[in-house]
Length: 446
Image (cartoon, one colour):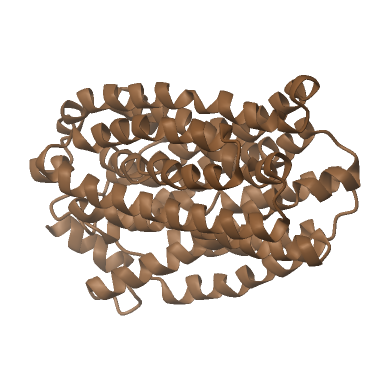
């Protein structure tokens, strides 16, 4: 289409020729963005390993630590995400990601230089602001590099960064906690990101908007208000976001407090916890998102309702494993149930990202990703860890060191509501996809 070719010439490399992207290069870009996301979650998640030492050094409560690992990061991460995403929908997404990576890596290293709880909280705010430039532009880039029928798989692979990054944080953090001061961990983990920012800036090309969807018209820009109204008028999107919020509450609660759970309840050593958390989160989460992406693409190609029906089913199947993992009397039984629970509870992630991108118009995609992440992260990454810390303090008088067990179990019940919301989303999805005049029928339902 003429509009697409014109956009290609404007957006391609300096020669001015129409941009051509090979499958191999698209996979390379996906690998680079995945690595950025790994660094993102290493820098974000390593704090969970050091909750105990930091709490002891600064003399604060579990509620305060819940605020530090939750809202201190998530509040500014989510609010900064909206203007950055608006910038990304108009500007060069590749350069925005590289800049964000440099900022959050520098602020992670700065955490290791703090001398008070307030200073550490401010440094975490800086990490959150930098990381806000990561996922929304990355989602929009992936949507342009991969066509709709491959998008869930690509976004599922990108989502591995959560689990691989968290696994590396647990593994390396467990070793560092056993042998070194917590400040050294932040200094060591923050510096590599500064170097990788150069890789992003100089090896990733910015594709034209709508490159993967021939026939789409990317020319018209949209405002934030238009994007929000567009999404809110899609019932499937509203239910998708609600279901994702319920699932992320427990997901982020376990990510940030799981390390402490195994230490307090089962008396495992720091290195042992780091190893098992790395295996379960790294392998279980990665396999879960990969299966969720592949199954969503295959089943959704036959019937689009499966994009949301599948998350509803697997979320229900995962609930018994969640309660067994949290309430088991032995560490072995707990770990055996933790793996299938974590695998199943993360299969919804590729569908969440994919449907959000598919329902958004081309010039809305980074902003749509930021809106989704804004809501889900305020609830999940912000409220999830805080609620666990708060409930642990409330239950401590009755349950002592095992209070964290029942705090996490209380949060796990929200999985039922998440499954219900995903099912309701599936019932409205096909009609909502068909409402978009911007793309062809085959694109809308792919």
